[in-house]
Amino acid sequence: MSVRRGDRSHRRATWASGLLTLLALAACGSADTRASARLLPWSPASAAASPSSSPVRKVAPSPTPVHRPAPSRSPVAVPAGRYAFPVTPASATSFGHSHHDYPATDIFAPCGATFRAPTSGRILGASHVDAWIPSVNAGATRGGLSVTLLGDDGVRYYGSHLRSVAIGAGARVVAGQALGQVGNTGSARGIACHVHFGISPLCGGTTDWYNRRGLVYPWPYLESWRSGGRLSPVAAVAAYQARHGCPSGPTVDP
Image 1 (cartoon, rainbow, N blue to C red):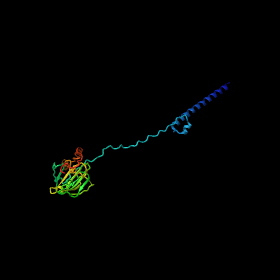
Image 2 (cartoon, one colour):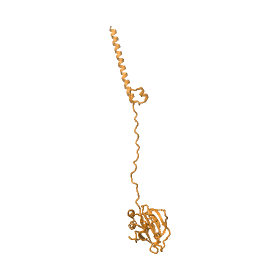
Image 3 (cartoon, rainbow, N blue to C red):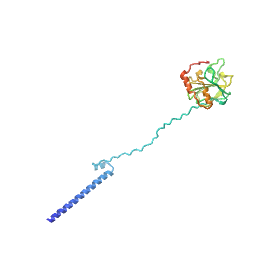
Image 4 (spheres, rainbow, N blue to C red):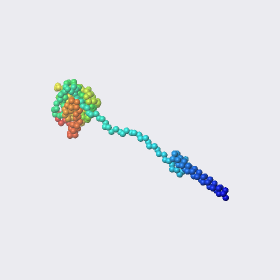
């Protein structure tokens, strides 16, 4: 009896020891499985091998932001309008604040003095021949040799009674560029050399001589330009045209 009882005790101890060993191995296996699930990347093969484990989702890295400079909002620099006194040397000139019958300014200067572009623009017309006939005294030819300039400011400028003209229609000129020489052609024959200077809206370009010769008094602008100023006739010319438009014929001194 004692032998059989001892055998039973021995078998129980052996069985218990084996059971504990199995439990320990199972616990270790579970821990290793969990560690593997955490450390190994997910793949279809790993998912099939361990269907109960949740797949590890791969998150794409955030793209590196590309720096794009904002568009510049700085205003574009626009140079201020430049004007030049139309006769050189300016110190040898004289002019008044009045003119017979219509607004214009006669700039008296030595014969042969340089007549210049008062501003940058395009030559609308240039007369190289003195076609004035005293007995006819046609208004269109009274200016003799003359130049008509459309400034970049939209104002039409006119200089006449010139001795010579050094420019042609269509030419592009800049402020201060020589256009001819002061003289006394046309209806100024026999009197002191001067430039008849007129300011007006574009109107007919070169066909409306009665407007081209002057609709706005130039002397305030001439005084400014002679002292290096930039007084512009744009507002005055626009105001005139808003009130009167473009006259269709001479109103005085036809």
